[in-house]
Length: 335
Image 1 (tube, rainbow, N blue to C red):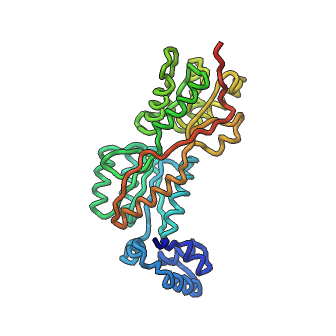
Image 2 (cartoon, rainbow, N blue to C red; image 1 turned 180 degrees about the horizontal axis):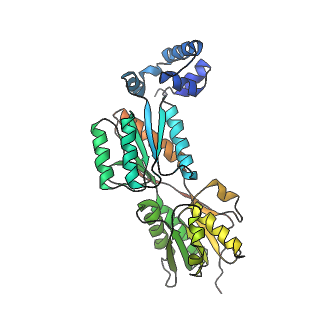
Image 3 (tube, helix red, strand yellow; image 1 turned 135 degrees about the vertical axis):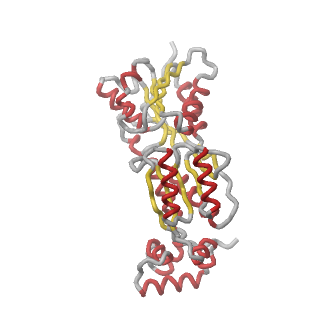
């Protein structure tokens, strides 16, 4: 099977950067000399026969709308990087809007992007409601496909990591490490993936086969300060371990324990979800269940491009996690 020609191939042949090729495809400014080299490379490789390139010639904008829940999240940064690389490969530009973790605002973000001429929309959603489904269907009828990231629903196209499986993975690990009383620091259950699936998966495996296992749930917000501000309530449960729905929440707990002179992990173990790079340099380094968010972002973009090319696309709900075992969790030996 003949390999598909990419923007990287065109850039290498024309001896220009990928961003220069992208600007040329989107009718941005490129010097006459470089434009000539790029066009010759396109003609030589047949790149213009690419299905998406044909859409650009059919007077599509070449712009993809992206809705993010927040702009200060390590997760968001990795998702965006993956999306950007995949879109750049086919000469697309991205237009961003932030929902500020507001589900109703997401709807307005999507409509704004459609009004701005986006060919399609990728939305990292905090929750898929009937209003989201109705708007996605309306946009589809207007030939603006939508891919949801992070949440799932059978009536939309989506991609998400296996949050339930991640919870089970960490629950099994903490059980094997001998812990029996855990404080689970989570977020609102309006967020099905982070607020429900991770917790339910954890509880299922952590309590399996144990009569004495206890999980106390404490709800917080998403911000790095959220768990820190509730640390007194969390520690009042006298857990041997604190498990946080995100690594960001775990960082807040590490700070609170340090300020109280409580040794981690000798007195209290701490673990999280996400695989944030900062977790490798906290003290102690954080045990976490990590996800390849950059790969998820890239796959989301490719799914949208297939929809734009009118190719069939299957939703993905089981992007696998992996455990990163560091020194923030200690094994409790039974007497």
